[in-house]
Image 1 (tube, helix red, strand yellow):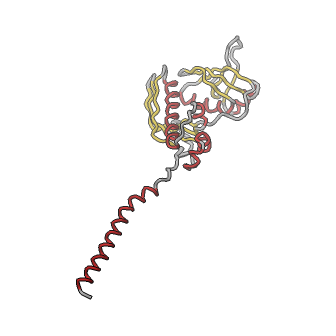
Image 2 (cartoon, rainbow, N blue to C red):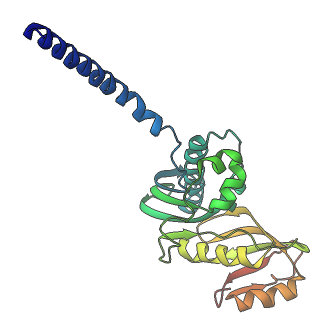
Length: 245
């Protein structure tokens, strides 16, 4: 066989191989995104969430700021899951397992902070529906329930309907006392509504599962004093951490 023929054939093979390799290189970047098409798992722990609000006093400002932060954290999750369902603040709070304060700045009328919000995965998926189920998601509640005073740990209201409703004045000496008192009341009552709040007291509407007398005994076992007021018409019950009423 002539030398030129063998050379031309070799060049033809090399050219075909080069074309094949070039085609594979062009296809490779196209295949990579397909492997990444699966949606990222939804995280039910949201960090670095801004929480800020202004109110007539620092206690109310903090309450509003944390509520704003919870809603902002939930909005992140809803957007990731493609959910457009609108939830109330009470619904969002009910599925919040804890709030960890990353940083905060307070003034007499304003609260600004950055927080981590942990949601209960099963409750959150229930609100998100099929979108969350298809996307998976982590099963934990984040970095765990905080135990220090900078964390606002929340639990859903205790089970059972309210047998009676009473007006009560909650007395406390600091923000941490109020948070702890509210946590215990959430565990001891069927419903807790905040009617008004200031730096040292709050007017509450409590849904009790038993008669007030029996409820007072139950609260005492949880370190909460629950006693009637002066007896004057319209006077509310008094509630405080043990020994502070």
